[in-house]
Image 1: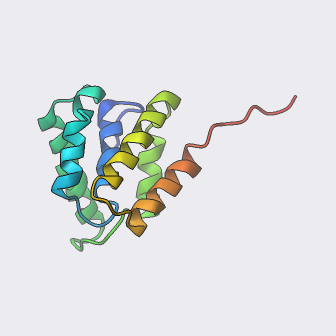
Image 2: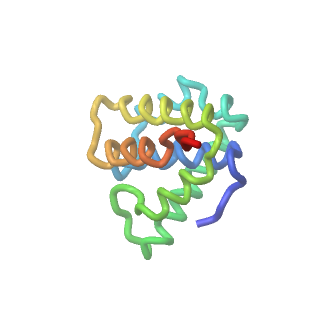
Length: 131
């Protein structure tokens, strides 16, 4: 899976793409939530650029799974994608958007709650070390 520059709009969009497919598929309800929240514009992307990132992400998932589509994103891939977002404010916005996208269809699937747990663990604020 290709890498994007840290904190880039593309890296952020791919985290949201991961949220869209966390339950194994994305629905029109979830895509409408992306549009309603105007997420591409907020990230500095056009709707077509966002869709292209989503499409490429799904193609990359298929390639890493030998063409077999399965629910969720492998843990190592998930960690790689989450590591590409370091900015605390961007992380907070993405987490809110992930939750809104996941809740848009009225159901939280197991893969979606796993992703939210991974976000919380990977993006936990760093505590200052005592001196």
